[in-house]
Image (tube, rainbow, N blue to C red; front, side):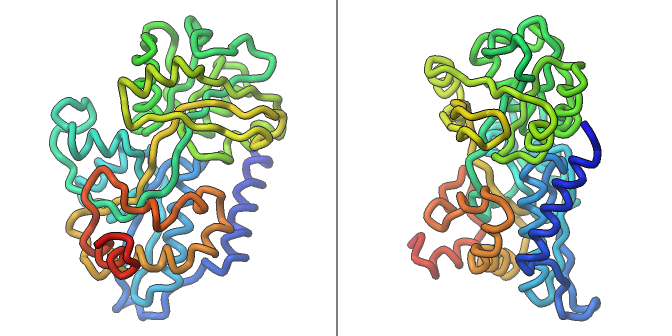
Length: 325
C-alpha cells in the first residue's frame, strides 16, 4: 500500500484532534502531575484512535493528569500488560476480557486471573473479512486452502477469528494463517500475498479505508445460519451490520459477527482518578464524537453492561447520573 495514502489518513485524524481542541497538556506543574498510560492496539485500527482521543481529552481537562496512548498488539497483550502493572488502562474486547478475568484456567493466553475493573463500554466491534474484489473468495468456506491473515499475535482479532472459525468447523489446518496487524494485512492483501484478511475493528477502519481508496475490495458476509452457529457456541459474539458505502466500492450492507469492547483499568487505580476519567469522557462526549463514529456508540445508557465489575470510581459517577442505584 502506498505510504502516502496511509499517512494522509493519519494526518486527517490528527487534524480532527486539533480541531476538537483535545490536544494539550495539563496546567499542573510536572511535580504535581500523575502520569497514566492506556494501551490500545495497532495504529491501523480504531482502538488506537479511540484510546488516543481519551488520553488527549483527559490530559486537557483534568488538572494534574497526563495520559498517553500506546500502540500494542491488541486485547490479549493489553491484559498481560495490565497484569504486569506496566500500564493503567486498556481497550479490550469482551471475549478476551472474559478469558482473562473469568475463564483463565481454560485459556492458553492467561495463567492466572487478570484483576481489572471496567470503566465503560465503548462500542460494538464488527469482524471484517476482506478480500480483493477480483478474488474468488466470496464465502467463509472459500478460505480453505488459501493464505489468510488472522490478526497479529496477542490480538483480539486473532482470538475471535479462531473462535468463529472453530464454531463453523474450520481450523488453521484448513488454510495457511498469517499473523499480521491491520495495516500489514491490508498491504499483504493489496500485494497479492494473501487471499483474505480478518480485522476485528469498528468501522470505518483506517487500514480498510486506505486500501479501498487504491484497490477494489470485497467484504465477505456471514449467513444467518453461520451467525446462529457462532452465537450458540460463543454468546458474546452476535450479529452486526457494516453499512454499505462505509468503504469505497462496497455499496451493500455486509452481515457479520461483532463483540462488545470496553475501557478497563487495573483494580488498584485510585477511585478519584477513575471517577475523573469517566466523568471527563462523558462530559466531553460531543468533542469525542467528532473524532470517530465509534464514540457515538459510547453512551451512558449502555456504559455499565459489562462482564467484569465496574470500578468504584466509575460506580460513583454512574450513581450521580442515576444510571445505577
